[in-house]
Length: 430
Ligand SMILES: CC(C)(COP(=O)(O)OP(=O)(O)OC[C@H]1O[C@@H](n2cnc3c(N)ncnc32)[C@H](O)[C@@H]1OP(=O)(O)O)[C@@H](O)C(=O)NCCC(=O)NCCS
Image (tube, rainbow, N blue to C red; front, side):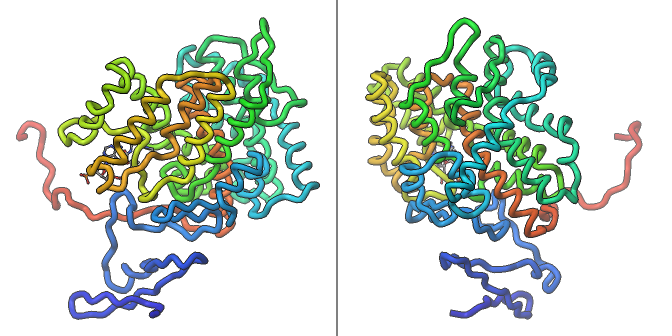
């Protein structure tokens, strides 16, 4: 195999180095192309562009493979916990017993947030969407920990910022929800594990204590693992690009939360439930064909939410795990949710429809996750917040990798298609 490709252009030949990853993925390194040829490349949506090299996640969309730091997602979802997976993703290796115990203890003892956060919360209208509130609260951490703004931060400062962010995220997320429903906020309880603590802050009230159910905690912990990292997607690329200006970890992650919010990215889990509810109201399983036809109609903006993926063109391995988990959780909790039946019928119909087959559109991670969240009692507006909590270790690891590798500021180029030079015309003559 040649270690360079040749570009023939305008009578010249340019040699472009070929870069190979540890899983034999190949890429053309065009970083010097403009300097040598005057040409740039253009690729809207970065469909064919690698923005970086990364040692965190391996994803093969054609084969349906997802591995964090080399470990298959199926094994991690079955055997690990969210905090252990977070350590793995951020530091690159599974923790020893001692490392895990220190990690858990440090995260547990940073869950409390400054009382002034309550005053920030009070400033939001009480029905604000929790994603907007969460992103504001996360960036507000810079005000309480201004040392995190120092671009020459030491490794110790970075470590404590990471601990604080992971520890406080469930508190901030639960408080965003309490603000939305107008309930008093609930303080963390350090006797509880990460996921149970979050559920208690969401659901207990001064009038009633929340009873921890291991089925609910385990299911949520598994969902967090499945969402923990997914290489250079829209929100992660946002975190890296914001961080590349040497912005703080908190502001970079806050930007990632906003990117995740959109319905084409993390907002899809909420959109899936809304779509399934609409089908239910429109006749239930019998209306599936009508919605399939709408999704195929190019004059109709409707898309089958939870279907299709930029990189998975075979199946999304997370969707397989979640579909199994959905059956299991609903059965264990004794929940009979009619939208599960609609979802299964819709999936089957789409997988047998030439439109979806030809375009390689499969259910993605969001297709069944909303059904589980609902069975766990998590309201629709909080689905994307759950995704953000899960994705946090991924954002942190990618931010750290980008800074450790001292990557340059992210600044793509463009091909200008506007007016060429023209003279200013006085307003009276226009
Ligand atoms: C995820 C997604 C944004 C990927 O987009 P993408 O890689 O840019 O793919 P495109 O939008 O170019 O889609 C390719 C083709 O499939 C069609 N398509 C993609 N997803 C579709 C969907 N969910 N329903 C109907 N058609 C879809 C497009 O219309 C396009 O058709 P065309 O070739 O006839 O024009 C897209 O599949 C989508 O919008 N899915 C629904 C939202 C969702 O579930 N997001 C969560 C992702 S984890």
